[in-house]
Image (cartoon, rainbow, N blue to C red; front, side):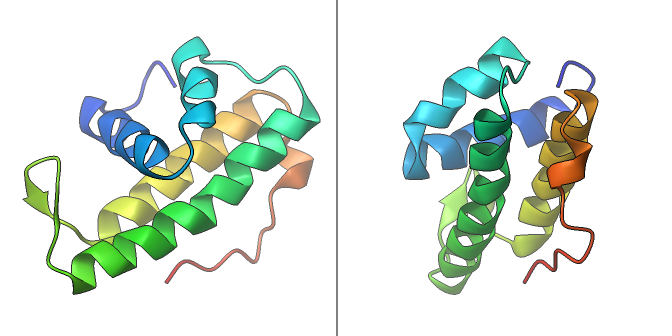
Length: 99
């Protein structure tokens, strides 16, 4: 995750703190050491996207900007790329649809 936009990384970390702080270390270490970690990170995408939609509906601000699902979609793609780069591309569902 070294080459990603700082805002997107902060966005991911924001929702990790909100939803599952145990995942923060995976992003901070910039590596995944097991399939289980990769699965947890991929499961986080749905949580993040759902919470983003709720936050948008509630007109909540995220990192000083109105919440929107477009940012969650970008973050989801970054997480998927990270999982692929760590060698766990076979876990990614090509039919994943974000709301």
